[in-house]
Structure formats: C-alpha cells, structure tokens
Image (cartoon, rainbow, N blue to C red; front, side, top):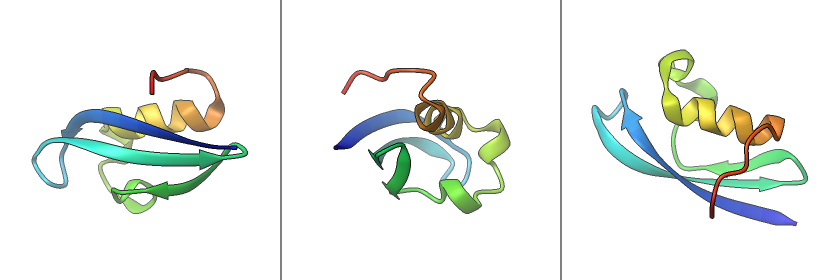
Amino acid sequence: MEKEYFLTGYCRTTDQSRTVTVEIEEGKLTEVDCCYENCVHAPNCTIAKEIAALLANKQEVTQ
C-alpha cells in the first residue's frame, strides 16, 4: 500500500521554506519532489531526516 506524506521545512538548495511530497510503498521511496537522494545538504536537512525516519519506520508522520 502506498502512503503519501507532506513534509515541511527549510530547504538550503532553494534557500526557502517548502513542502515536500514523499511517496513510500512497501518501505521503499517511490517518489519525492526534492533532490533528497543526491542533495549535498541532506546531512543537515530537517526534511531529509524526516524522510530517513519514515524509511526506517521510526516515526509516524500525520498525513
């Protein structure tokens, strides 16, 4: 079953606050509308940390 999440936070790449749409199916990232997988700022990004937590199933985000 696919789940869709909307995460908000500050994006260093675009230098602004934004909402990122994340789709996860069977524990795997199927779609994300930011450069999460290749972003040089991911280690310091709050949105990237939320995505990683979702993938690790450590945190449930309200849909």
